[in-house]
Length: 248
Image (cartoon, rainbow, N blue to C red; front, side):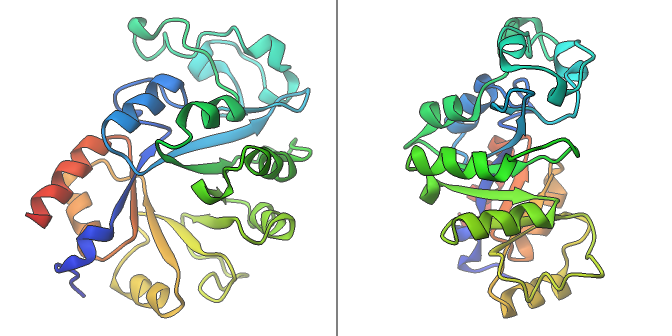
């Protein structure tokens, strides 16, 4: 299967945790860089604090990005908001804060779309409900997709608002769910999982295919040639350059 004609015109670019190859992940610096580099989407990770605020953080703990060895569900937003989430990446990002989802939407609205991953850690209370309420209140439902490794979370999103596009994140095909027959719109899959057979099933069942996390340029070219809809990368500028070369 070769989509070397106009399919390349429809491959969109998602900056993984922002342009995280160039700035500390899940921070406004990474998100701003993603916009400057011409990304179509920013992928970011939404979690709940102990007092129910929705903040942007990938790990269950704060240790890797702030040096604070605490679980996210045990810490309030007031304890988090002044932490330094940038210095670990490079000292020029010192004092970069962990943002709230609402602050990110305020900053990027009208500039880029968001892929909001609902990160489950076993301690979330109303994660899907709160994220849906935020995007509804901020009139951002048409400019985001909500994704998760946890199928129950995206089912809950659909119950709350059927008009919000959702994606199921996959490392491998589950035995108990026929993802191709489900009513989700997007399959967000690891690059090792996607091949011609996968794409044929996805196209037949009208599913968008988003592929993560593709940082190698040769792998980018292979994935593009399969005819996927979206590629998630830490280096959106590299992907944009390759797409430009193919189209020209």
